[in-house]
Length: 405
Image (cartoon, rainbow, N blue to C red; front, side):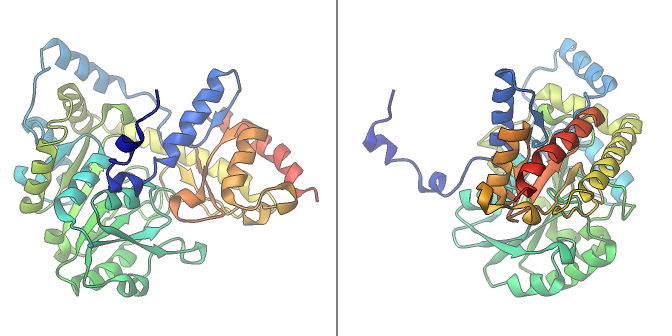
């Protein structure tokens, strides 16, 4: 069935301004090829390959059997909110009240709630690039303008105070900081965050959105710090967004949370009340068990990612034409492939390179253009060591076709 032309013309302009998530699109294509019998190694999606730890699943089963299947408060159950408060005190030295916490359907949902609550048409949001693919499009959905601050490898892909200051205008409403970063895996140091905080302190109308979702997937610049730890004077001007997806391998459970000024959290709650209402009750009970339970699983997964990182980065650094900087955390590496481009073979940019790898090597990765950094690729090592070794072997064999002039 085709859509009526007049009906198609009634689609909202905001929909025309955005594009689907490229990471999800590439992962879906890889899944389709696997279903067709191709042995595709999917290194595109940012999802832990570990199963959710058994104690967390057991709590969800107990919750189901106990009949916890009804609506909860819009902003989350009292138990989960208290677990989040305790997590912030235990891990971050930050102290919040229940009216400063909002539980949502994933960290992505938390960001959308924040943008919906704060942004008006013409407002600007500063986003350092490379950036997580969804930031700019969510800003556009709220009729505001993403202001992209370009960074490069010489800066360790981190926004400098000078670049931040130059990007600020009287329309700046929010600055987004994601550390450690998706896609680069690099993290700001306490000193670097303090320097950025000093710039923001000069502009009282600006709020910081601190994306801490990879907090526990960190092995350098430990202990983890966010901008409030580095610059406590910004406590009342920062919304910290986190969740259980990455640290506890709970992506499908869809639980994220935000902490910040009570007035802003109340506005985000109002937005959520007219969209999803509460997150799933069973997922909330499972998330509470994750935050309150034994944290050994978190460190075990982090150590596994670190071992995979060390193998993969060392292997990629041996490939002529590829430049790969070691990560500080997450489960991503973000190499430059500019030295591998070969126009005579029809490979002139990172998008064509990604297509080449999928077609010729059955390897799915995400082109750096999706993250605002052309001629790079994002590779996730949230997969088995066997898969990584096979991917490296395929990569080395297939790239010989590009380097043969």
